[in-house]
Image 1 (tube, rainbow, N blue to C red):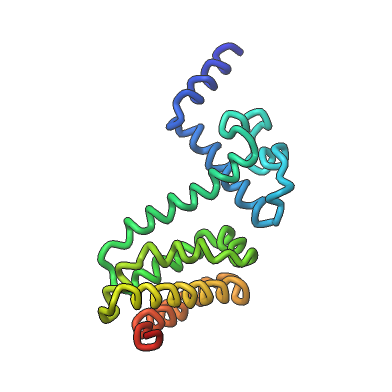
Image 2 (cartoon, rainbow, N blue to C red; image 1 turned 180 degrees about the horizontal axis):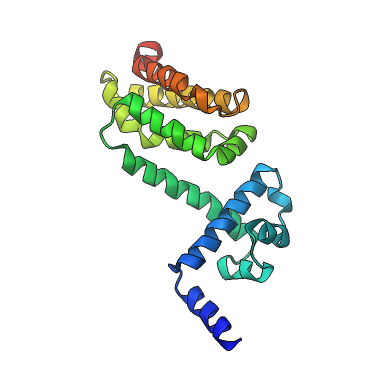
Length: 194
């Protein structure tokens, strides 16, 4: 029994241990599932632990309290956006939008909640990660005109994603059509918005 406890303590000291990381990932996935079911304010540690397939006492090895678990879930999504931005490289607008839509599709549970709660901030954050690519494809205007165009374009982009999520349930087969639609919106944004 002593060796089991010692091994657990060693894993907890080393936050990069594969077993620790795997359990932490399962907890974050369980938080995401719970949020998608609309239980954010009523989440219970026991239910979360059961969903993650770990003991209830393990929860406190990973989080201080339930709000900490929810915060870490949102921060993990932000970190994924940073990785996405790094993976975009010098792709064309179509390839960039395609990667973004695949990212949203892979994280559709999270973005379904975003759409359901009508919270545009995460969708605007996506537009911000490829802002430089968008602005490069536009004609150059004064800074305030470009900012207004970018703001209106981010609303259009968010609306297209919301429509895809709410009415088309993030249908995978719709991605090529959405890529063409969003690329067209991006290319002619200054013609429409200036």
